[in-house]
Image (cartoon, rainbow, N blue to C red; front, side, top):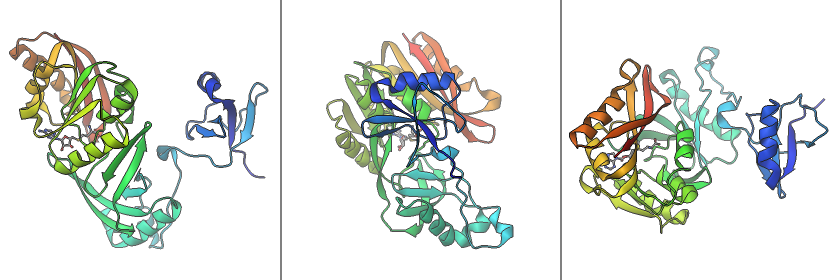
Amino acid sequence: MKKLIKAVRVKVEESELVRQKLISLSALDKSRKLLKKDGFIEIPVTENFITNDFTLIDQDHPQYYLQEKTVFIDVDIPDSEKKLLPHGWQILGDIIIVTLDEKLVDHKAEVGKALLSYYPGCRTVLLDRGISGQMRQPDREIIAGRDTTETVHKENGCLFKLDAMKIMFSQGNLAEKKRMSKLGKDETIVDMFAGIGYFSIPMAVHAKPKKIISIEINPVSFGYLKENIGLNRVGEIIEPIAGDCSKVTPRRIANRVIMGYLDGQDYLEAGINALLPCGILHYHEAVPEAIESRPVDRIIDVSRKLGRNVEITGRRRIKKYAPGVWHVVVDARVD
Ligand SMILES: C[S@@+](CC[C@H](N)C(=O)[O-])C[C@H]1O[C@@H](n2cnc3c(N)ncnc32)[C@H](O)[C@@H]1O
């Protein structure tokens, strides 16, 4: 008998209340996405959920969150190598990005072809060898599909155009990007390491600040930042500035400053100087577990040196950056 893929079908305006109710009943299936169909919302629920209160349907076209997927690629290679096949990969727009154990690199074309066959909507597979340098540039190679590597990726209701051969896009910090997208209404914000608009675009789209000054040093990223401002129609909010933020960051202008670069300690002075009294700093750093107070100490030291009072208002781990090293964000109020 076919297994039912259950969802509750509700009116759009009732969906948030029902979702909360389903969470409280432990009935929400977190592996699938909420979908909008024919003016209704389908909220995924667990297989054993039974109800007389809601309309229960069998979903035709469920969509799964990538992290929860159970896709195993099948490639015609010796059994001893099969256990090395990847279980995870990144999908940006219509491009799949995968890293491979070095023993599988000779089979990269077969792996690429297998991945494309699982995702009919995708057209290119890139092999990733890591990200390096101040401009966070990836080292990638096309292993299957077409040779177009420019794509438009959708995240949190925003569009990000990028060339996946040349530009990184971290999905591990989605929760932080979502948190930031709710902050800054009517404020003036400086995003000192803007990239293609990872933080600036969602903040402009959702929080509607008065102004965001978005600074980026890499000319390729800067080109896409400008395109993404246009694609998301936020040209009246975001002012892009090309250059080195240690030189071009304006002083005493911002209610909020974002320093989304993991190696940005040398730029803290420029970041704090950009803040108006009672301004908020969001400072990211990659920090070894053994010295996890280092970003807080650095913010306090630089603020003191500049004669500014500071209060640390939050500190979060975002994701594992390397063994024993965390990507953390510290929020601070600077007077
Ligand atoms: C790591 S990316 C941003 C990533 C994003 N916050 C995320 O976590 O997905 C940092 C960006 O800062 C830019 N950058 C590095 N040094 C810079 C500087 N001195 N001035 C302006 N931009 C800089 C890099 O080119 C890159 O696009």
